[in-house]
Length: 85
Picture 1 (cartoon, rainbow, N blue to C red):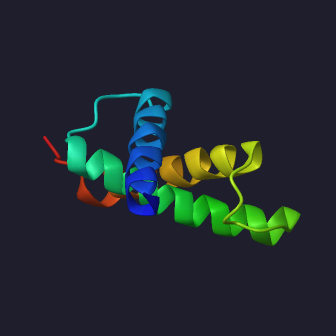
Picture 2: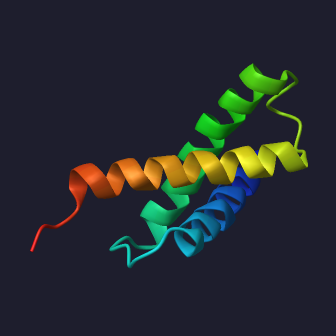
Protein backbone atom coordinates (compact mmCIF):
# COMPACT_ATOMS: atom_id res chain seq x y z
CA UNK A 1 0.00 0.00 0.00
CA UNK A 2 2.97 2.31 0.54
CA UNK A 3 3.90 2.44 -3.15
CA UNK A 4 0.32 3.17 -4.20
CA UNK A 5 0.06 6.00 -1.70
CA UNK A 6 3.34 7.51 -2.94
CA UNK A 7 2.06 7.38 -6.53
CA UNK A 8 -1.26 8.96 -5.57
CA UNK A 9 0.46 11.61 -3.43
CA UNK A 10 2.89 12.36 -6.28
CA UNK A 11 0.08 12.71 -8.80
CA UNK A 12 -1.88 15.11 -6.57
CA UNK A 13 1.21 17.19 -5.81
CA UNK A 14 2.16 17.24 -9.50
CA UNK A 15 -1.30 18.44 -10.46
CA UNK A 16 -1.21 21.20 -7.86
CA UNK A 17 2.25 22.30 -9.03
CA UNK A 18 1.10 22.37 -12.66
CA UNK A 19 -1.97 24.39 -11.64
CA UNK A 20 0.14 26.95 -9.75
CA UNK A 21 2.82 27.25 -12.45
CA UNK A 22 1.71 29.69 -15.18
CA UNK A 23 1.61 28.56 -18.78
CA UNK A 24 0.94 25.25 -20.46
CA UNK A 25 3.23 22.35 -19.64
CA UNK A 26 3.59 19.64 -22.26
CA UNK A 27 3.72 16.68 -19.87
CA UNK A 28 1.39 13.76 -19.45
CA UNK A 29 0.11 11.62 -16.62
CA UNK A 30 3.34 9.76 -15.93
CA UNK A 31 5.60 12.84 -15.95
CA UNK A 32 3.10 14.67 -13.72
CA UNK A 33 3.28 11.80 -11.23
CA UNK A 34 7.08 11.65 -11.40
CA UNK A 35 7.20 15.42 -10.95
CA UNK A 36 5.13 15.16 -7.78
CA UNK A 37 7.09 12.23 -6.36
CA UNK A 38 10.41 13.97 -7.10
CA UNK A 39 9.09 17.21 -5.67
CA UNK A 40 7.99 15.43 -2.52
CA UNK A 41 11.49 14.05 -2.05
CA UNK A 42 13.13 17.42 -2.69
CA UNK A 43 10.61 19.40 -0.64
CA UNK A 44 10.45 16.89 2.18
CA UNK A 45 14.22 16.79 2.44
CA UNK A 46 14.49 20.59 2.41
CA UNK A 47 11.73 21.07 4.96
CA UNK A 48 13.34 18.48 7.25
CA UNK A 49 16.63 20.33 6.97
CA UNK A 50 15.12 23.77 7.57
CA UNK A 51 12.49 23.05 10.23
CA UNK A 52 13.69 19.71 11.52
CA UNK A 53 11.52 16.69 11.90
CA UNK A 54 10.87 13.39 10.22
CA UNK A 55 10.29 13.56 6.45
CA UNK A 56 8.32 10.30 6.55
CA UNK A 57 5.62 11.78 8.78
CA UNK A 58 2.84 13.30 6.65
CA UNK A 59 2.10 16.80 7.84
CA UNK A 60 0.96 20.10 6.32
CA UNK A 61 4.56 21.26 6.06
CA UNK A 62 5.26 18.04 4.11
CA UNK A 63 2.51 18.85 1.64
CA UNK A 64 3.66 22.44 1.27
CA UNK A 65 7.29 21.38 0.94
CA UNK A 66 6.36 18.77 -1.65
CA UNK A 67 4.43 21.31 -3.71
CA UNK A 68 7.29 23.82 -3.52
CA UNK A 69 9.76 21.09 -4.49
CA UNK A 70 7.57 20.07 -7.44
CA UNK A 71 7.33 23.68 -8.60
CA UNK A 72 11.13 23.98 -8.42
CA UNK A 73 11.51 20.79 -10.47
CA UNK A 74 8.92 22.04 -12.96
CA UNK A 75 10.75 25.35 -13.40
CA UNK A 76 14.04 23.51 -13.93
CA UNK A 77 12.37 21.11 -16.37
CA UNK A 78 10.77 23.93 -18.36
CA UNK A 79 14.04 25.86 -18.43
CA UNK A 80 16.20 23.05 -19.74
CA UNK A 81 13.78 20.91 -21.72
CA UNK A 82 11.21 23.31 -23.12
CA UNK A 83 10.50 23.33 -26.83
CA UNK A 84 11.77 26.56 -28.26
CA UNK A 85 9.66 27.97 -31.09
